[in-house]
Length: 278
Image (cartoon, rainbow, N blue to C red; front, side, top):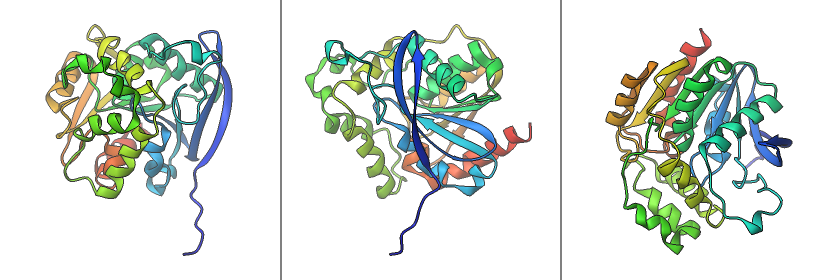
């Protein structure tokens, strides 16, 4: 086959987060309104490659996705070998805002999935003036039980194949095998203990039920096959927060943008068109 170049461009930015230097990798494509994408726990920015290669999105949006420190191609901090990784809400929010500042993003739309969908609630409610809108894929305002949390202490969580097996049940049976397996591969690539460290945020340090007013439009989009974030849970979150709405996505699971990108277009394009129209 002839060589074909995708429109995605990747580069690094050096910035400070809570007073500590980090080297962050990000990818982008398109031009227009910034669309800042946040990957799921234990994964990286490749989950958003389909959005970056979709002209219907990139003709109007500058799609940007970065790897959180410790994830993908982003470095952990100097001295990482002497500490255990553990993501907190304060660090997560600080990292997102620092990255947006470093790229001088004016009023971006933030689009996060899973733990990125959860933090979108906090961004909309506590920092809404900085964003045009916040879209939470598979996100609620509080943790919901979906496994026995004692498993988090298992040594198996240090293995990428085990992490992939854990999240495989969150996917939709309608997802094409090609894209589902690619989504699981992102978890196989995860560094030792990173998925477990993200679970500290997702399971312990992200109860945002006290946030009741969004300072920008907050749109929660949830797949019917996701038992980690159920449509009922997202609907209740939207009911709790003034300025929020909920959308149920049929045939979708926990990783809509990567496990079933063609079906996801049917849901995300109308939302992006509405936000672009103001």
